[in-house]
Length: 217
Image (cartoon, rainbow, N blue to C red):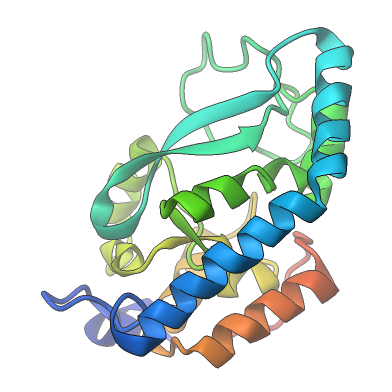
């Protein structure tokens, strides 16, 4: 299915997306807040263990905050466990991460492979910056270029960004095809339902956040 075809049906309209309004919007937000709050409590010992390991590894800061583009193109500060050296972007600026990125610490590489570096974003979800399920948010520098290159890219911002998403459960995360990732994101926005969200969450738990490509749309 071509992006151009999805663009005509998934483009941002003046009306809010159905995942943001009415009973379904309320239910999705309640699920986000409820499950994320429970996750923060249940996972707190594990999160503290990761935090201690990061601090002991090099003495640097534990969390990493970075500007991302979310709902309706608004900027917000995403929270992650720090996985890179403290001076990772001092000379290079904003660049795409790559497999076995030399800027990563040894612990950081492990956290990235498992997706554990993303867990602090549960707090972003509670705050309302993100949702459990949705397109992954990009940095403003990358989003600006991607809008020019890929038709329909802005449609990703019709919904809240997600901790996981339809693209991610099909293996399109990390250093993978932007076009295929966008195709899956637009498919999700066009076909969104609470049932689809539950399916994405279930498959995330089963498959994890593997970068291995799987059959998608």
